[in-house]
Image (cartoon, rainbow, N blue to C red):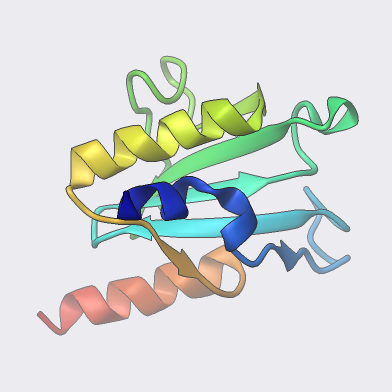
Length: 123
């Protein structure tokens, strides 16, 4: 099934986080967009990293944090201590909500949000 390829996080290119980044300096991150609706940030140096676990952050394309039932806890846009299968489950939910296959976005989160909102304004 084509979509399974996109659920295999090893098929994406994890990017290094610049040492100047105050929160996850030295870690790796991956940002997926789901059409023009959602961004999912996945980092390996957040909550749970000492146990080899991942942290996700959910955002709209304008960079506003999203609380998403079934994905994040109430009043939270991040969720840590996730293993790979839990992150895949979150990706599946976002595919279902958006109807879009995830696409990897390159660069720092602020740059991605700026690029996507510029594109959104052109339609």
